[in-house]
Amino acid sequence: MADPRDTGLDLYHRYRDPGELTLEWWPDAVELATYVGAEPVRSDPRDEQPAAVLQRWSTPHGLIVAVWQLGDYWTGFEQIVKWLPGAAAYVRVEHDWDPRGPALETIPGRDAAQPRPQSLLWRHLARVLGQSAPYWPSLYRDPALITAWFPGADTVHHPGIPAVDVVPLLRMAIRYPAGHPAHRAMIHFAQVITSRDDESVDLSILAEQFAAGAITADQIALAADGAPRDEIVTANDLDETTRRIGWREVQARDDLLAEQCMRVLAMWDGGKTSPTPTSSRSPATPSAGRSSCSVSNRRNGSRSTSCWTPTAPERP
Image 1 (spheres, rainbow, N blue to C red):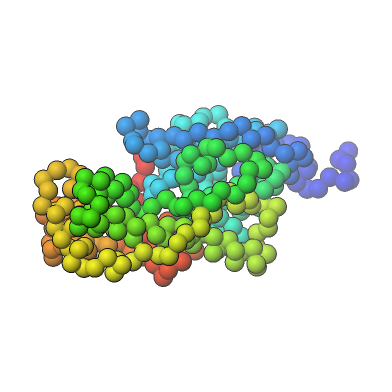
Image 2 (cartoon, rainbow, N blue to C red; image 1 turned 90 degrees about the vertical axis):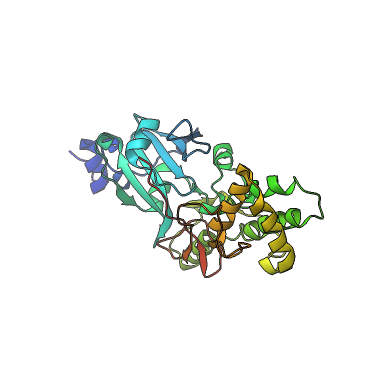
């Protein structure tokens, strides 16, 4: 005879292994899940940057894999299962939000061969882990940061991942004396790109949901937020004459680094800052534009009315 204290969900789990179900239907954790660790992974060994970080949690019902997508690539569950087969459940953290927390997609391990992702509320992830689940806003999804995290770790103040890689600009700048227009223009433009990189739309949405009671501190733990910064640098902080002379100098160079710098310029503002109306060194593909930030469509962004949202190629 069934124990009268059992709930319907308890009875359901007497006949089905929770590992066969989506996480929403798993029972509440009776003890804290054990954090096993995390590792960055690449879809192609030749890729410079990892595509995702896989976090592993051990529970009595099997391994839960939480997948943090990096940059602007979307990663399918087929690829995720190849990276780490045999888990009881896979959870992919999306870049957008639902009304009660960051958006999640999940599949049970039994569906690994033919994934049929389903949405999952954040509170269910916290419930089956038996603790608040860590969260990294899109702007601070640094693979080294996620890999180094452990339960109980303090929130890390991160300067933010630049929407566009400014390393080519810095490498070009050091090839000129400090007072040279090219040096000044490259350093200045790198500052313009990175000066808003600690402003996260995700933090604003999270604050709103906290205030509305849609999500609570015992469900989500903020693992990273923005670092203190000085005043925002704008394009007009360097006089136009110096900017144009500096960029013309770079544009006139016949080397790969110069092409990379011109590509950074085109990616950032569509070439508006270009020293000439059309640039022979602009990339052949359309540059990334700007689109309105919203709860349902955002990447790395800022609190301004728009944020950098490149069209992302899908991972196979």
